[in-house]
Picture 1: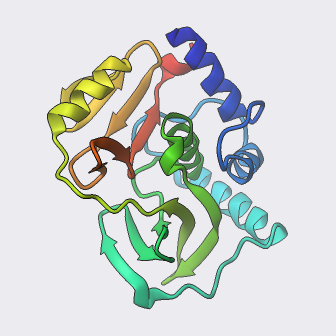
Picture 2 (picture 1 turned 135 degrees about the vertical axis):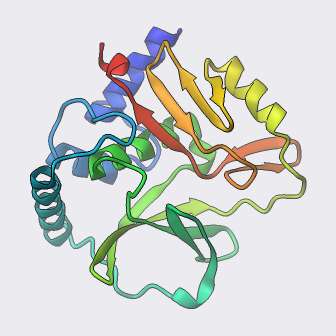
Length: 211
């Protein structure tokens, strides 16, 4: 079963298979180059980062993906990774500068993995914006209005059933898939009517994923 999932994920990452809201993300990832990601928080040489930034900016311009009319008055919350704004009663917009990732490609891989595993809270990439010379992706996501507290023991059991074993605190690893999943605290996994909703995930592909 895990080998089947790994094959499906490789197809999604390469753009050969569809995933919810994946089209734009897959297209950009292909333009940034194929091949394995760098793994968890791997540092990239400055030359690589500059080249990737040039490629990404070219893609944004060519596909008219710049967004300059965001309503910052609808701010909801902010974490180390992103800022959240209310779009309407059913959706939120999230601005992310990919600070948790070694490259933008790794960040886009994270979005595709999230959309594969958690399609009910899938990210839809709207475009990009600049603020104080920092590039941010702008993604749309369903707004989950929680009505009960999240029990992290339930999160642990759910993930364990799906092959992700708790390594420390709120971090998990699926050794058969070669995928790390981190930062699953109460603010990133919400509970509504007894169901878990994963709204903020941090996925990393390791070398085992490609082997």
